[in-house]
Image (tube, rainbow, N blue to C red; front, side, top):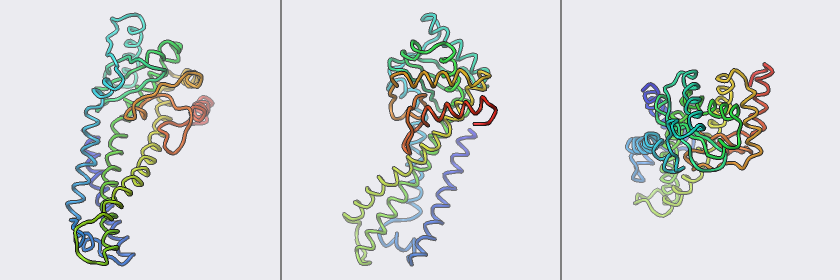
Length: 299
């Protein structure tokens, strides 16, 4: 509830700052923001609320449905440990790590695919941790324990919630700014004549949605990369050594990476190369950060 409350406050603050910034920009270019929007058929207050509701709404719905959608998308099967020795070890290990991390026991699942793992869920005490069949076969128990520690750190840190809420904030900003810029461009090209929004409005609106959407993705993915470093450190703390996580990352570099659905990529484990649009830092950078931690130099 605390995170949801902070999310609501953050969204309201974002829209307030956005409206002030818009007024400042329009004042600098000699336009009255509210008058210009009104002239082009857009009510500033209604637009702000619309962007907030749709930006937040989509994020909240996706978050609440995240566990169900993850199971369907990856064909994951929830296990309880009675299926066999591997499953029993997975469930027992997750339970031990969850106790150390201070969270309630999450659901544990296995899904078919190449080496990867992920965590998801709307609440830190009602999460899902899933591993692929290949990663259980291709990693040692110590390496796999480190991977599970990484995922439990995501859960304990509330990264699934925070990342989704950040996406919601940026979605609202994209929707708001794309419509505003489209209306101003259409008004400027109409020569000040009052008219219904025409083709130019929709052209600029859709182009700005794409451009601003890419910018939002860069911000979200930069945040996601920071959380990966934090989850690696969390795994090292849970296992009382960075060694197993370093070994797990090195192992991943030699394995065929498992591809997760877009909605789960940020909560996965693999990521060989990094770019502005990557959800994960490169394996080399993550290993280097853990090696610095191992040497007591900080991450």
